Amino acid sequence: MQYVKLNSGDQMPIVGLGTWKLKGEECVNSVQTAINIGYNHLDTADLYDNHQAVGKGIKASKAQRKQLFITSKIKPENLNYQTIIEDTKRFLNELNIEYLDLILIHWPNKEIPLKTSLKALKELQTEGLVKNIGVSNFTINHLKDALELYPDLIAVNQVEFHPTFYQKDLLEFCRKNGIILTAYSPLARGEIFENEILQNLADKYNKSAAQLALKWLIDKNIVAIPKASSKAHLKANLNLFDWELPAEAREKIDKLNQNNRLIEPSFAEFDY
Image 1 (spheres, rainbow, N blue to C red):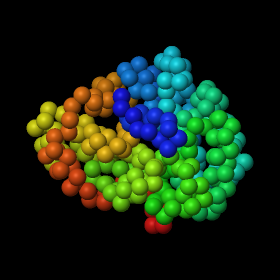
Image 2 (cartoon, rainbow, N blue to C red):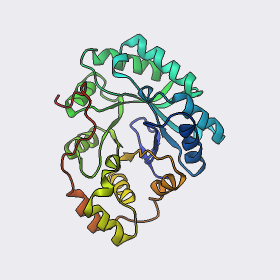
Image 3 (cartoon, rainbow, N blue to C red):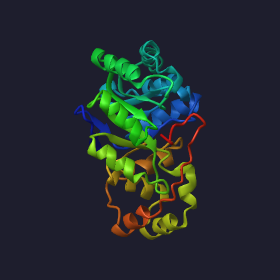
Image 4 (spheres, one colour):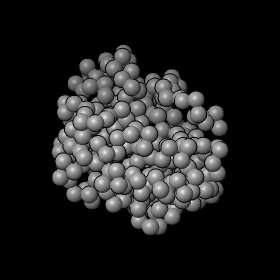
């Protein structure tokens, strides 16, 4: 595993297991299998309604807590001060852990003052219930607002990021401000497998399109959290660290951007 360094000094594994849409026994088994084959980074959220299944998978794996990096996220409607405090304690109970390595505001919500939300998260960090604080689906303007309120608080921004949605300006802003970018839907919800250029590169270099897309991300120091449930896919998505991405592949993937945003719910604030 490779790691990125957060602004707190903590090390975050550069590849993790995304658990969106994983529920029940499938989720338990995926988490257990992932940990047992070498994953040490798990990403979940209150919106996913799978905390307890993730927790059971962790317990079944018999992994030591300190070996894992666990992220969860707060629903946008629950960003009031007291709700954040109560929800985070509930998350820990559901996951059966004593602290989160990273907690994120899942989506910005202009109806609730950001200052209020960040104050609650800072208090949770001071109490040791969360190690690092971040956001998700924040634009550059959202990040500027957060940095103005708490210059050194935001460690991570988790956003949709993949070869056909290369958010270069956002990536550069995060880099300049010491914020690690995490890519969700790094395989474009499977669309990369239909991309002719990626598939040709995969055939040429004897890799899968998924491996090329993930390698492209981590070479840019972007954390990737692909979802997988089968052992074969889990293994393949982790097989990224003993080979180099050919320069030709990097150059061609860099040019695949189509501003192809796939996740845009009605409450998103991407126009801010």
